[in-house]
Image (cartoon, rainbow, N blue to C red):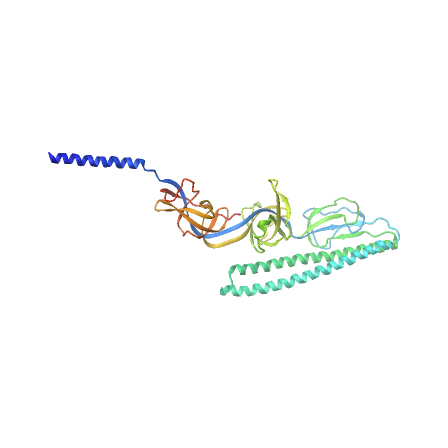
Length: 406
């Protein structure tokens, strides 16, 4: 009898315990579902993104040297014109006996053209000396980089300096040839004035191309009377450059030689370029929101050429201002502010743990972690205000999108 009573009591206690366990389990809050991403080690890049356009490195406007009737120009846009080719002829009107003022003006134009020619030749010599120095520094760097005495980044900078210098040398040579041609044009104009004083009828003046190049624009296509200085034809060199206008606050972060990735030009592949110049003066531009902005032009040269691009084409440029090969990084959407510090929630043993971290460089997608996290630790993406330190969570890992952005 006593045994049966004890068995009933034990069964009742067990049943009561089961009921209590079920009730407590039902009342216990379920773990909060969160998405996590791992703190990873890898490369990271910070860029300044802006729209830009291509333009020819050198362009030359051929103008009428004297007044008179111009013949019809036979060239069209896109035509190739060799140096010293006659592009137009101008027949001056009948002239009075030799005018000392006109003669003095013609001689002054010759003198001015010769001075500009001498200046252009001096610039060529200066650029040639710079290129020689850049070549010697690059050759020394080639030997040092093999032994590890200089970093690879410094070697690439010196190599880019040499390439940029050679491009600039070609550009100033182009201008020197143009200056020499202007001297010939001025001399032809002087001869025409002198002959006019002798015969009262000046000979037709041949207008020649100062350099070899492609026709960008024909300003005066038809035969008509023109005045001195009237634009006739615009020529360009074959080399292209990229002009990107950025905010002045961003321009101070950009250094000459910085890598530029050209996208949005119509092709699938990004084109590489390098910054050659940050212009020293800014200009005011009205943004799409009607706000006045101070912007600065950044000039970059193509590292590789693409025949599909021409003058004035729109491009999207990503200018690199910082990059590293191996750092600890997390998605930017895992970070949040607590006062003056950055924090994240780290998932440890099924619980969200608040962690203060020190952040370095950032872009729109990633942030460099200097202190506070180890590679492989899981951090919560988009932590809501409901997440608290020590809360039980159920994590599902996601693959974070990584990209370099502004």
